[in-house]
Length: 65
Image (cartoon, rainbow, N blue to C red):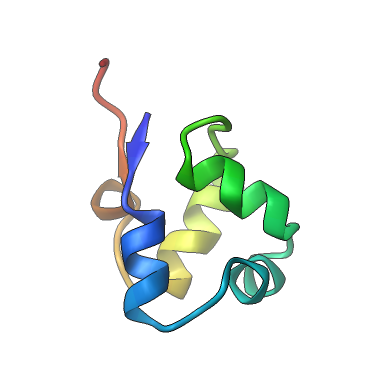
């Protein structure tokens, strides 16, 4: 699954640790999501989309690669 987490995080001038704290996960989890090594749960995807004031579909691309 592709995503725009890094781009959106940087647009808000947040570090991975800061975003992780807002979302209730570790910096390592944010890094893994950004690099495509981890697909977040729907709950975490929803939380991240709310932090960015975007829809889940605007943050995550659920289309098959």
